[in-house]
Image (cartoon, rainbow, N blue to C red; front, side, top):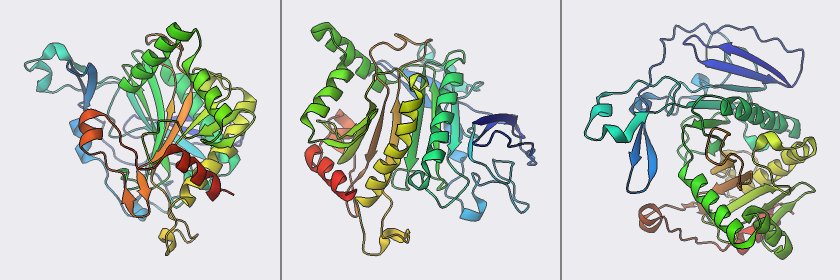
Length: 374
């Protein structure tokens, strides 16, 4: 992998990740962009003991542009995009409309009635373009292309973990208009948070309590139990296991664990990295096969692409509380679709009380995911 860092016209960093070591990247951003100004602010909610990000500048971000104006496609035929070069393998760049920023500008609200509960939203938000092909999806990538994305995620985890104030690095992908995606080009994001997220704190607390009770690691015990029982396993490899969790929140939700517990992406071995790509691609393709429609969903392949969220959970950085600790690296993949033409909405119980009600049994979901790939 070759890594080439450059700057866009407004000063944001852009990094090319190329499979070929002899690739030259010297294109210059020709756009007359003003310097970006962000007003990100963190406000502490003492009732729920968590931070909320206020980022009002994001109201002006690009919203469902036509394909010939996509800002994530390469610059070609006189049209300049966020990527100056005319082609690319994988690209990562600082978000133009970030929720968190290295140099946020605070508004007057910072001196409001609760100034002690507010602080600048310092952090970093990046966009990860998986391929230059606008009409593709992650599931369409080859194993080598998917591996390059994994290597880019790993590199960003390493670099972002070293930034002052960054406590947690979170790579993820939102896919589908149903999820709220406003740019259809295949891409994901990375958030570098200045605090440990509520979800991670809850998982860490549960793992710590489990260690106190049993002397063992919660995630190792959970994976061993799923592998032993077997009825919720979707895919197994020498180094990875994909399963529907016993208490799945979403109708179709799969967790992908390395069989060896590690804290974050940086700790994966070469063998683990090599096996992840084809196994994850298989899993994504099974998700796309879940909801067939008579007209093929417009994909031309008889398959309606399933909206999903794919999220890497990894331990907080060395700057955060606990470092690696008890948390285990894993990926969670889930869709908000519960059947053809129907979505799982987070209504009263889920949104107001954080109590999920699942319409599909985990065992049924696992069986369906196994069957569609057969």
